[in-house]
Structures are given as C-alpha cells and as structure tokens.
Amino acid sequence: MPDVIVIGAGVVGAACAHYAARAGLDVTVLDRGPVAGGTTGAGEGNVLVSDKEPGPELDLAVLSCRLWRALAEDAGPGGFEYEPKGGLVVAETPEIQRRLAALATLTAAHGVEHTVVTGEDLRGYEPHLAGGLAGGVHYPQDAQVQPMLAAARLLGHGSVRLRTGVTVTGFTRSGDRVTGVRTDRGDLTGDAVINAAGTWGGEIAALAGVELPILPRRGFILVTEPLPEPLIRHKVYTAAYVTNVASDAAGLETSAVVEGTPAGTVLIGASRERVGFDRTTSVPVLSRLAAQAVALFPALRDVRVIRSYCGFRPYCPDHLPVIGPDPRAPGLYHACGHEGAGIGLAPATGHLLAQVITGRRPGLELSPFRPDRFEPALRPDRFEEPA
Image (cartoon, rainbow, N blue to C red; front, side):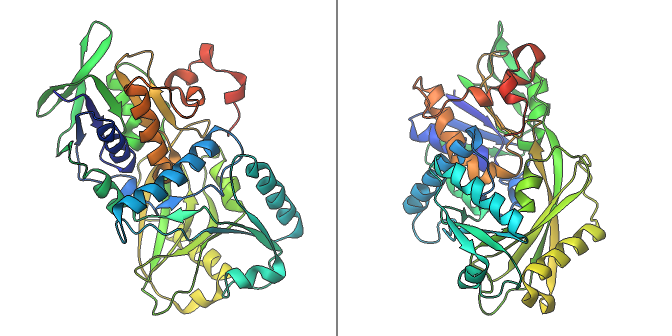
C-alpha cells in the first residue's frame, strides 16, 4: 500500500511525488493519459517572479525559483533544459514605466531581485528590440525549463511508481476519511491522496463530494522555425501581460510574450480566454499574437511560424492555487488551480505538501491557499481581491 497516491502526472503532480518520495514516502502516481499530457505539455516552461504582485503567490514563486535551481543542479547539465535566462518586462510609455518600477520596488521586499532599465539601455539587454520603448525592468531570477522533460525527470525518483492509462472514478472512505481511490483498473488504498489534476482538479474534487471552482482558461502559443543564431536573450514581455494574468475577464486578452529556446525556436504568446475546453484553433488570435511579437521584435517579420498549440490553464477566481489538506474530506490534499504559473510553482507546491503530509510545519503559511476558502462562510475579506 503506498503512503501517497498522486492523481495527475503533470509537472505539479510530478513535483508532489518527487518531494514526497524524498521525504521517505512510498508514492504512486496515476494519470488517465501520458506524462505531461494536459496543461504541462502545452506550457512554455515559465519560472517567473516578474509577473506577480506582492502577496502569497509571490512568496511561493520566490521559494520555487530557489528549488528549481537546486533541482537543476541535481539533474546536471541538460537535465531538463533549465535556463536561468532572466526576464525583461518592457514599457511602451513613461507612465507604464513608472508603474513597473514601483511594482518592482514593492516586490523587492519579498526577495525579488531587479534592475530598472532606461529606454536607452534596453538594447544592451535585447539588441533586436523595437525602438521607441520607454524602458523596462530586468528580473534575473526568471528562468525557463522544458516542462515535459522536467515532469518526466521529477517522476524518475526511485520510490515513485507511475501508472498511466488509469482513470480515477471515485474515492474509498473509512467514515469521513478518504483512504484511497477507485479507478477503472481497481481500487488503490493509501494514507494520503493528492489531487494534482490541473484543469480537471475541480472534477476530481467533486468525486470526493467537495467543490473547487477551477475553470479552464485557454491560451495559444506560436512556435517559429529554428533560427541559426539566438535572436532573443531573455523572456521578454510587455506590461500588459502582468495585467492579463491578474484579470478576471472571460473574454479574449492578449499581450506580447516572446522568448527563445535551446533548440533555436522562438515561442510567442500570450492569449487568455475562458471558452470551456474548446480546442478550435483561432486564426484571429494567432494573427494578433504574431503582430504583437513583430511589433516588439521587428526581426521576426521574416521568420516562419511552423506550428501552434493551445492549452488550458486551471483558473481560480482569486488567482491563487489550491494547496493543502481539505478539511471537508480528511486524507485528501489538493495541489491544483495554479493557472499559468503551475510549472513555475510546482516545486514549492510539492515541497510544502510533503512537509504537511509528514507532520512538519510548512516553510510557508498555507492558509491563503486553503481548499475551502471559496465557501462564503469561510471566505476572509483579504482573499476576495486577486493577488
């Protein structure tokens, strides 16, 4: 009998399994599809502190950045294409630049390193940037990983058993306590069950009789042909990306996000819209993303796009993930609802949950992420505004 059952073999589930195994627990990971077959496989691999305002999610991100660096050192060169490239947020107007600089000053108190960059100095960071920008802020802690490779590496810990092609259909109980899962391949019992099902985390929670208001938020990414020489040094995006991340809007929002990969391709985003699980390719959205990227890096005008793909971010109404034990279903833990930050926040999520499950005090206060915070009688005022 495993100590821990993890539902979901995306990067968050993989990190939960990895840190639980490192804590000495016996772990089984279940997924109805392949490793990284959901949101993880449709991500850019962002490990960011630059897009978060001061608050609990930023503290989680700062911890996760440290953990990703440590994991990369353990994995060795090329383990999962960890790139500590840094991020560059650019401003089109002096007013936006003032806001970016003010936000950077606030986040510095949370351990975020930054350098305010003048418009004249931007080309020193990115020689191919368009002219006329008012300035920006450089964040050296921002990084990138290859998300599918990272999930596979994290699942490679010796005491982690992986079972794909297994669909969870319910939970076993002893009284009110969750004691395992029911699947289409039979029941499996364990001391703790972690719901790391990403965008489908609400559906898994419902099988246990509890509610998590997680919704899919679709996003598209363009991929260019491999370039013979690196064109873009950092993850580069406009200030609108920060606003869109924190937005509650269901309609389409786009912002320019551009970065290179070790393979020489350039990834172009970002779009956000709540349209359910509709995977229909939207040519107007792709056209808008391409135009925004060219406006930021004119040299991309003559570069061919070779493919596009979409994924579904697990959106929560307060923009905070759900992490921790569920008091409504003892024995059930949640690690989902990270929206577009799941890859970046995965190590901290797994590390903190492993501490909780093994009876240790977590390194960060988990109450802002508590699973039952959405119930009206339990919703503190401080969680009603997006973080």
